[in-house]
Image (cartoon, rainbow, N blue to C red; front, side, top):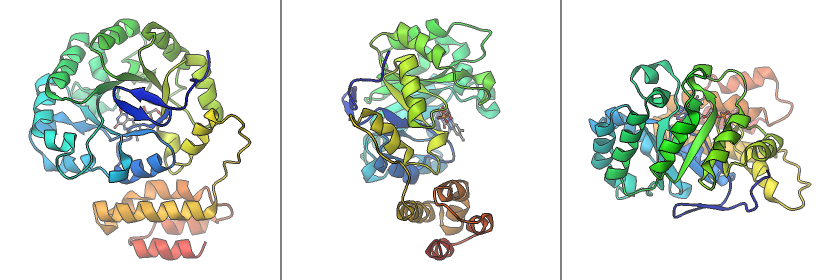
Length: 335
Ligand SMILES: Cc1cc2nc3c(=O)[nH]c(=O)nc-3n(C[C@H](O)[C@H](O)[C@H](O)COP(=O)(O)O)c2cc1C
């Protein structure tokens, strides 16, 4: 097994200029972070999970998750829920947003979340809970197909819990519905995020899937781990989540596995870090209002700053206490 022969991949009618996709991360992957990741080399990005229960009731709070930036196409909309009818109504009620008739770019895919392990989502019968009920999984997929003209994909874990089995049966049942691709996070829902992602298990499923496009996911943090994952599993593309937070340049490093003679140094210049922080805080301020935006940025900022050597812990902590964009800009000027 090996890494794919070409850097590019065409999925449905969508040309992706790379094999590394930004994973959906609730509370992180808004349009600003997705755009930054795309500029740094992610070939596709996915919104955080959006509730069809809320969308089918036209709850406007969710619309923020569906905001897109012009530069981020292609982008995928992830939906979650437990009721097939709600998927249909949610899509029908928001077809203008989905198709880009609201003045923003169109989504390229609808991704169905069948992997979220959080208690609240599982209790509602959504996310990874669906992996325990193939009939329900399929009725949701069919509902999405009937309502949306877009290609769709599904994001799953290996299963709900490892005692249940049925991994191959579930995968085959999904593939019969002809999604454009399936993303497999190599953990069970009951693992939450414990242990390591099982790329051997992803490999077994990819083998069953044959030519069908499988995107592997879990614990990719570096070029070396990506090469190993491709070699073990033979997947067509890789989705990267946590390691990209505060480190969108990771996609640049990952894409270099397709460069023929690669002796590059992947250290990030200080001015690049500063430019990205400025862009990110500015968009956060526009998107959430200034104070809320600066609070939102706290989870990114220390990670960004870890790419600039020789900043004292004391100076770093000043960044997470600020309330205004100007205060961050002033602190950046001192670096
Ligand atoms: C904070 C956080 C939020 C997440 N939100 C979502 C989500 O909205 N939808 C989803 O399918 N997966 C979500 N995930 C799972 C990730 O997409 C991904 O499958 C997981 O983090 C493993 O990949 P990684 O090791 O590259 O981070 C989330 C994970 C984390 C840590």
